[in-house]
Image 1: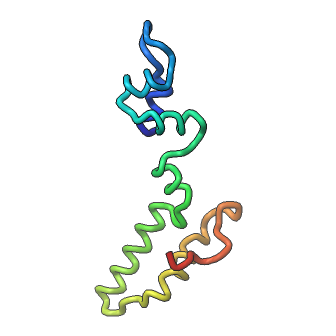
Image 2 (image 1 turned 90 degrees about the vertical axis):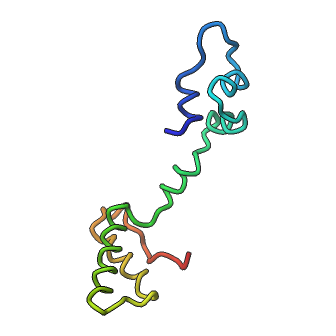
Image 3 (image 1 turned 120 degrees about the horizontal axis):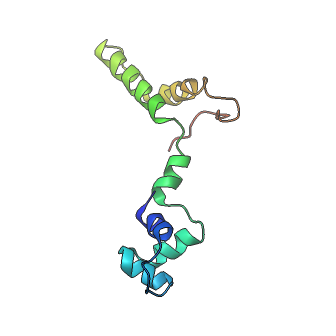
Amino acid sequence: MDRASRVLAEGLPEGMPNTYAALAAHGDVPLSTLHHRARGRRSREAKAKSQQYLYPYEENVLVEFLLHQSTLGRPVQIKHIASLAFSATRHQPPADRPLKPPGVN
């Protein structure tokens, strides 16, 4: 949980006015960020995490495979890495599995 969400969840001590400005000052969080979290906008980290193609353990397996191939003297061409990443997702449940390989970015 990011800092702005934590400040919203904790609230204010007794005697302070219940406003976003008071919450922002008390929690040392920018007012705009606090307002965005209260309206449901996710943090950059949460948004980036939901957009990842591979789970972290799948990324680690792919990196280890590429490093292993390199130490064997058989480096993998960059154009094949997307299809390897797509193959790494085959064990995911069908509802979570991507339909196509990752794009160039």
